Length: 168
Image: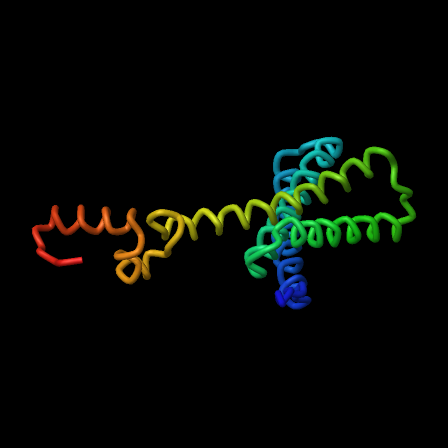
């Protein structure tokens, strides 16, 4: 039977915390920029939305990186946590969600999902770069050289160019 991995709670909370710290640091930078540049308050909303989306992306990426699989699910969990956090802050202030806020929530959720997916795509790309033919990892190329034509041809070419005589 296939053993299914469960989503690790500690890794999810760690990724959410790191994403939250990243978001808070970016918010502090935005506050500093707004104070020094005398920016209007109306310019804050697009930048805050972008910062929270970036934090959700970072959080989803880290969760999938920690979990090593199921990037979409990991990103969705992290995006959902960010949405719940934003919704909780809004409701605690007595602000009812408007259509624009629901759109921002959807963006935050989507960016969390994208972070998880891109993390898995990145790790798959790095794992595939460690293979010669896509079938066998580099560390088993000598063992499988007699069984895999692509490895045997490549090893023969390497041996021929390096002037080493080895019988396969």
